[in-house]
Image 1: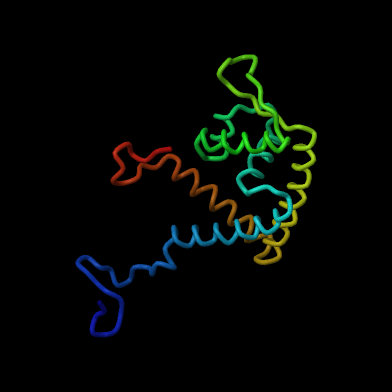
Image 2: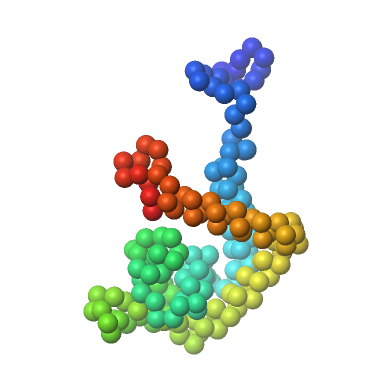
Length: 170
């Protein structure tokens, strides 16, 4: 339904100055995330790795012998998802898992030599992707964007989400 002026549908409480869908922050962040991820996945072509698998490998390069729960925390996903990713990486010979000596139920995940080589290749590809992004919008804007995203991430990490029974804190 449109109003007589041919504008968008309006209802009770409609704010005519409200942003369109494309201008909403969440929509824009989601769209941009998809575009950035598509570019990254293009650079991963031929490696046999998905973007989430590459994130697991790179996280392990930063923190060797990490447990599944710690990997999940660092990657902001659930432990079962990380377990599936690690199982695939282990089947591909890129990681090994073992019971952690300090905790029987904790699975320690480590890179194999092949996984270490894959990480070096991933780091080169990630650097190339960063250079592409810098060429597109400039280093100063990239740094400003990183800074703003960190502020938003921190704020959302401690904020209560309206309508969420547990407050929505992560």
